[in-house]
Length: 205
Image (cartoon, rainbow, N blue to C red; front, side, top):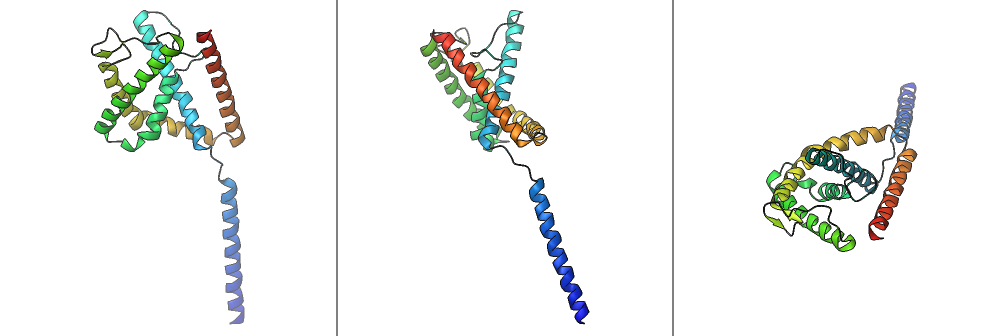
């Protein structure tokens, strides 16, 4: 009887030790994740680059030759990056609620596009886009066609494009050591800030 009790006690102690070891092992395996703001910056860069590709392709199709697109020196259109971040942060809850997503996005991004156009023209006395020839435009800054386009883009981004890139980026990041992830973000941020400052100087001077 005593031996049986001792055996059970030993088994219990062994099980507790195994559980502790397992928990310790899991703690070691769990990888540190990037802060959310860092992830948002990565999404910003990705969508700003996609926007640059879209603008460049559309320009090439329209004009028949390559033209420099965007405000920055590098291959980024920040308005697309900011647009994506606004969608991800404030409109993700409308996933699968396409009518609300369309209406809210069309209104918000039409206002956003107008303010960006007005601000950049006030700062640099230049226009990066002009919809004067478009049907139902407002001071050439926004038009009904592009308002409609913003709504459609919002539906595509929230329901399909953002989930796709989120999954792919998470897979890529899971294979990169945390310290290198941080370094990559810092380097990209430094390049982006430098490009932004130099671009401001170019248009202001």
